[in-house]
Length: 522
Image (cartoon, rainbow, N blue to C red; front, side, top):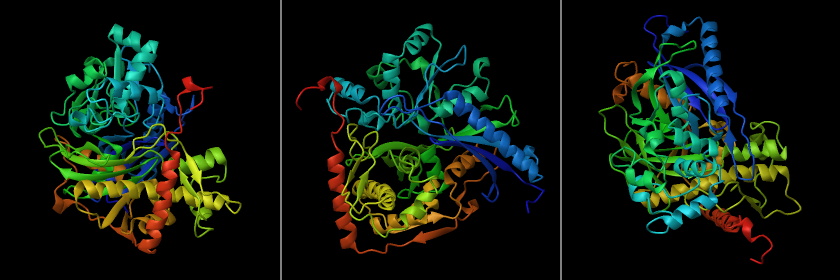
């Protein structure tokens, strides 16, 4: 039963690739009070292209807010108990809109969109060192299809509406957080065009050391700085809601979704790490107050900056493009399951993949390969292969990819992990968690409350100066209850299977070819 006195709630917008959600937490106990979720529609205009409707992104979140507030009423809790809200979002997804009309100039180009393969080659060719890592010293990232600046460069080169808006001085660029914040704080009537350091660190335009837009990076990508949002910390009051059931409420926290999960897992100490299983898979490792250069293909990124005058904390990140998206593909494209939840039951009907290995490189491979020309590959299929084996191979693919980034993380840090903290929607799948422990050879630790992504930005929002309803002092943080999965196979079996996975990955490489060469012998 919820106590009537001294209750303070914090709302958390979690706008992801496949769904939008609004969750409401109790700031004293970190308990989830209620939430509402709606699935997002994606568009695939061409092979490798992934888009979403900016207005649907906006309206889906607003629907979730309304429904979650209705849920509070059903619990006899006044929505005035909500003291602030935070925004966590799919990162890198690129939006451009007109600040006079408020209308999008193009669909949102989603982070895993691979249309910019040729653009990447063009940019690498014009870079000083003629390789994908030329800009790493400034931004910590390789030149790849993944990041916002490459997508924005494509838009500026190919979209007449964007070109005209830039010429007119009316174009605004932002990631999803900026789009939501601008609309909710007034839109065309003075909306705040801000972002936070974690989202900015994923654009390739922010200098990791100054935490500001970098003149050399903007010049390299031919991007005018006046279309970029102002960079702020992850925990401060950016503005107030001007409409809807939460009108007047401060928006006081912004974190990219993976960094938000790091905060939600309370990974505040150097050396702590977490892995989030969502549309993609993302392993973040807290490296403390200084950025660390990766030698193994990982990303150097900002983990968080919890206040205007607080220091930035950095992380190494391993990013996998396709995790939960692979299960969605089984449902939507192959039709072998009717819901994503069915994959566990189907895969449990066999005790192995019977030699089938599935590399879901639908839009290329991310960490540690950064191969945009890789494509999905299934190896080892035989007459006995069934949909059950394919379902299990899909789960194993997520776990093998995690092993690859964990091994890279161990090499960069010099300190092998002895356990892995996990979160995200896919962690509800017990079979997946057991396979992960088996293939890593270390303990997998899952929190009993899996909504750590939404929790992280709620903590940041509640802790902001001028709000002060959520203490981040270690002695005040609520202890996280967990369950564990221990490895149950031998090291020999683990390494044998990983060797086959590596063979399958090799076969997925350099599959996408230049269309201009069609008809020639290659």
